[in-house]
Image (cartoon, rainbow, N blue to C red; front, side, top):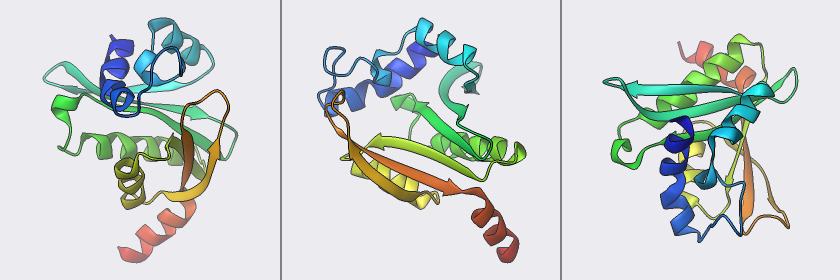
Amino acid sequence: MLADLVRNSFQDVANQFNITSDNCPTHPSNCTAEWIRNECKKGTEYFILLENSTAIGCVALERANREVYYLERLAVLPAYRERGYGHMLVDYCLEQARARQAKRVETSLIADHWELVEWYRRLGFRFKQRARFNHLPFAVTFMYYDLEEQFVYDLAAA
């Protein structure tokens, strides 16, 4: 079920950027149940968003080290987008990382997926770097959210 949710949520991105199981087997549009199980065994946590008992979105949170967590596999089924669910899932991950005393949450995405890069920027994420990898058919943008800075800013705004 969870692998289907991830795979179906990322299929439109795969189509948009011509991603296939041949040129990018690790893209979430190729997610399998075994992939999810292996990530969970390594400590990655998945949080699932339900609407009327139907799984409509999810996000994964992986601990990189004591201070940094990775936000991964942010997925909302296309029929449920534009309702704030992605924002809710990101906020939940930020709360979880903050509760674990992390200082930063990082994510990565297709660099040319400008709408998504801008969406993360509006949520408070900042550009870290852009990189190319031989095993990927696209460049990657790395972004981060500074939990300490945001927390101080939130206190000042209150």
